[in-house]
Image (cartoon, rainbow, N blue to C red):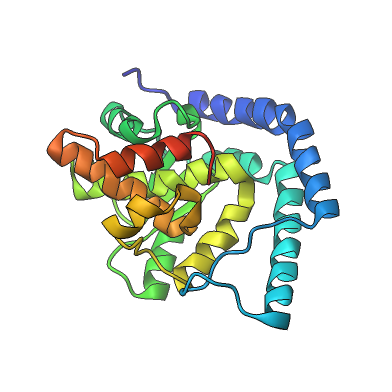
Length: 249
């Protein structure tokens, strides 16, 4: 694998801003108009799988419509692409995925991710602040295509850190599929339903889009680990990962 220097990575981020930010402008504008006039947004579910009843239900839908509209406005302004460029400028040590990391992650995501735009920032101050705030041993934060880790990660096939990386890359896929709205949805998921996807019972019965954003990322991570350790692809994982690649999230 050819090592790309700082200026090369900077040019890739600038290219993404121009090609993706401007290239997807018509698509994003149509999405913004559709959202505005059709009042459509699928609100995240509560822990019991249902929305609050009656008036609270309507207020929840309205609130999420407003959040969705704000996020689609920020998508129009190419905020994620600007964030990628600014992060690369402020943090020259942010690196691209290694050959091993990319090869392992491709087992789950295939070609359905902008691999050249992904950056890893290890020992990130932002992630360290988050770790301190929640009192956890380690923390990762996804900002645009940049994954902020509170510590250095050591990835090899089937490792704990490689599983962690796959989880975070799933959030990048969510960004590329539905835009910045994945962020408030993931934050909501952390407090409503959490990370537990329910195991085989739900994996066999539910579609990928039925799970919250954190559960989706955990499914990707668990499916990767199963494949890495057994060398075989689980039938439920195969179906769910196909839905992910088709954008059914």
